[in-house]
Image 1 (spheres, rainbow, N blue to C red):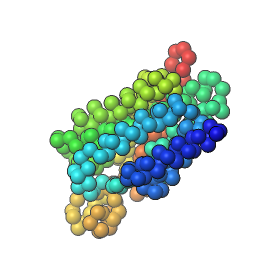
Image 2: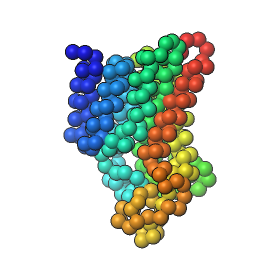
Image 3: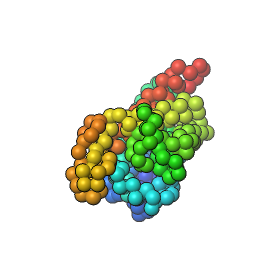
Image 4: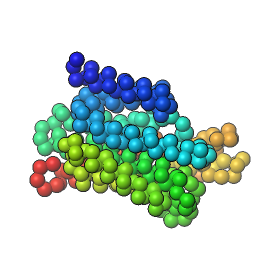
Length: 265
């Protein structure tokens, strides 16, 4: 069996398992198959380990406090992750995995760091969101430090910030142990990407208002079915676009730090 055939088989099995566990929608499972095949097929088991260092804890954390998270109807998509969510979190890393083997040293190592940095950013953001949402204290805007509703983008808590650091470190550690990329550039890239996500969430991301419920939300229509009104940000800048920008930031920071690091990447 060729490497890509093995990768495709493994990615298909993982996607079907996640779909059956309701972690992914049908479209999300197809997108995960594409991402997994690209990552495993081009980067082998080491790259697959980095992918799972992001995916497995993220799915587990999403199941913690499900009732409370379900009650946050003002936030974006709920339920299993769809194709756009999967590609927003894994598309940049998959592209880096495909391109890295085509480059000569040291640039292949730099792109490998970008690959891991993208997943570290996705992990840091997911851990921060999933744990920060459950924090007993009210989140505060990363820009104004004023209290905001739990679950709305751009908010930070102490617990969420600690989780952000842990999520980035977890992927960076696996990347280091698997020989994919050095720890520090990946960890810093992950943290940078997650905080960039929060900055965009507090500024450029679309924040809407439901006139019926008289509350801020991030969906149109609101969960109650009423069309919402754009109050701030760009109409097209929703959660998936912000997540894509965050992984790009994580990849760029990790690559830059790896390229300027003394010694071999």
